Amino acid sequence: ACARSVTDQKLYVRSPTDPLFLPIANSPLGTADVIVTDQRIVMTVGIAGDNRLISWSDRENYNTWTPAITNMAGDFRVSGSGKLVAIKKVQNQILVIGENDAFAGQFLGPPYIYGFNRIGDKCGAVSATAVAATSDFAMWFGMDTFWMFDGTLKNIPCSVLEFMLKDMDSGQKSKICAFTNSDYDEVWWLYQSSGAIDCDSYVVYNYKDRVWYLGKIDRTVGLDDAALKYLTMVSKTGVVFDHEI
Image 1 (cartoon, rainbow, N blue to C red):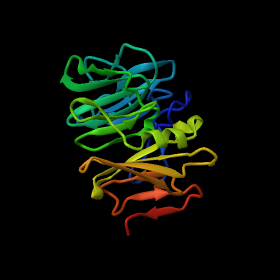
Image 2: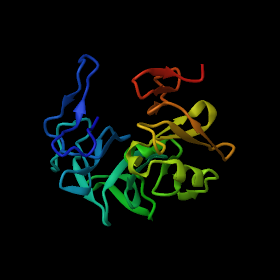
Image 3: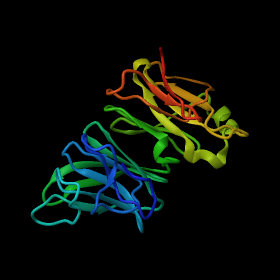
Image 4: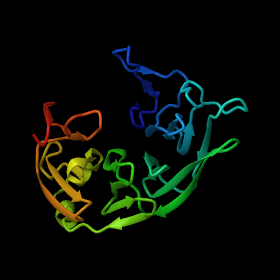
């Protein structure tokens, strides 16, 4: 886990036998997002003082981040402007999304370990939480449009976008939370409307039928995961709901 972009915070880890998340002593500070790759390497985007840096640990060793001949730790600084905000795994690739651009990475093996190529400009995400991913694709909300990466980058037309942009509190875009509802082939975005004090609205894309719908709901975050029996959402007062039952 990471405390996104908090400049004095390390990564955190929790073992099955420990009730607490504990800081990883040698990990980077102020990371924007984190994943574990298919090669069992911890990878982060953005660090305090270098928000265009992708960095990763040694294989199966999240305490080693300094590159050496004897390990697989390393880093890669991508060109461009703006912060890197999110990282996801999609179709055996590593998708890195910035405020303004996006990159796709692949495992190369020694000596470079990973390589990254730019896949688009002016396609950034408003925040790390505005990105939802499955094993086949990722979708995210940009400044004024929706994007999908399923091996290629696509702009997804949205029939409710004009309403959403007028309804949304533009100063609270960082609260947008994206997640999937895989049982119904949906991607959700929760957002805060004008005059509200927290997320109270949603837009949904049904990627099977390619249709959009919207509505109001008192939820601030959602999670659809194989470890959970039901889609889980949380209200602004902290009540946890199992949805679709």
